[in-house]
Length: 493
Image (cartoon, rainbow, N blue to C red; front, side, top):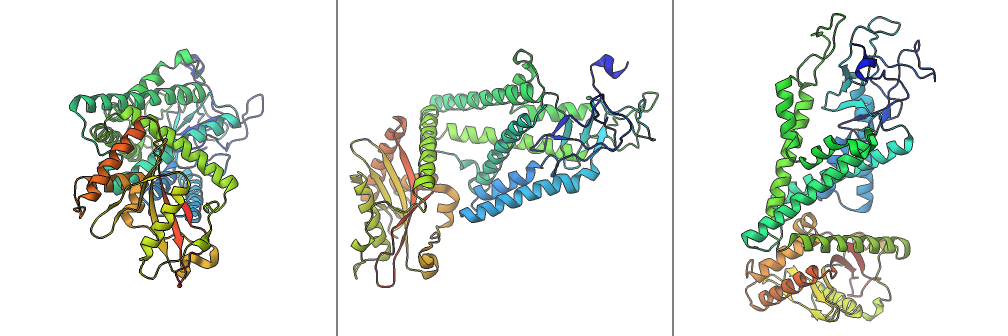
């Protein structure tokens, strides 16, 4: 039976292809120039493994690694993160376009048809190209323009960044990366788990239907049942794939045929161990994701309301960041007179910084402050609330007299502790408040524990009612004479 009878089409140089381990769709570069379509696009053969664009499909693994490094706090600071992103993009292009392309192999082709030269066997839409690091390249019939390719690339990039961030958080905090501090009843925990599962699978269905079914495959919405099923079983699918592929010989089988229709054993076919390792990686990631959901469900009172509150907070944070970028370059505190502040001779440097921070927040309308410090003077520097609205702020205040950090007014960020940096503001402050509330780690004076319990109660109340609960960092620079240098600087935390 011919390919035209089975619905397969001959592949040519005007078609887009995607890689399961890549970010961007790309067109394949043809090596034979004897046979073309009526529009002068050359037909592809089994030796065509490079693409027509720099970087080929842009390997996603370098971007995942870079996002993991950033999320783990190994690299911090705007300039360093930009360099990391640039290195990731360059490595992605080099790995896919420069290193992997010569070793990719087409499978699924037949030796019945060839174009011009010996062994220039033709390719059809049933063929796949294997990458040695586990990617599978296939024809994407629904992608026919650069705009569609860009949309698909943006979607893949977003998932790669999210995946890397998840791995980075797991590397530093384990399954407690997204855990809360509550201990709900079993029934509440089960409802939380159901809500998390349903949300994740709903997102999976929407993603698969819209981007894989309708965009990549060019299907009508009514024809995307297989994609919807894949999204609904997103956590089980990697295990199903491994089982089915082991049974079918997917990882080591021969897929090219000779003229008689027999397998060609020496044709370097089969998807290889790279595909198996990739499938095992995603199976592990699925198992870990279920573990994270279980942990999260068992440590939050109402995951749905808290998620809505967190989403509102994220939107508000993004809006604030946009305003700061557009209108408040440097994030210096507005309308703040540094000349009003000089450190008292009996005052510790950290206490001086916290006094400045408290004055600033009082000027913004925060009128309730909660003192949470252990015997060593560590804790949460600023926990404040607006009694009229219920909004809260939790701030780490860093104060320094070092010249290298002042840097002649071009300030450098004052370093944080590893826990503060790796856990992030929200998780770190919640952890310290919970420890204080429980009287752990030196919080034994009673007052800090009482203040922490009240702060946690009000924070939960604010989050459930959709009020803003912010975390941020304030850097304060002081000269050798105890004078405040310039305005304090607010930074995201």
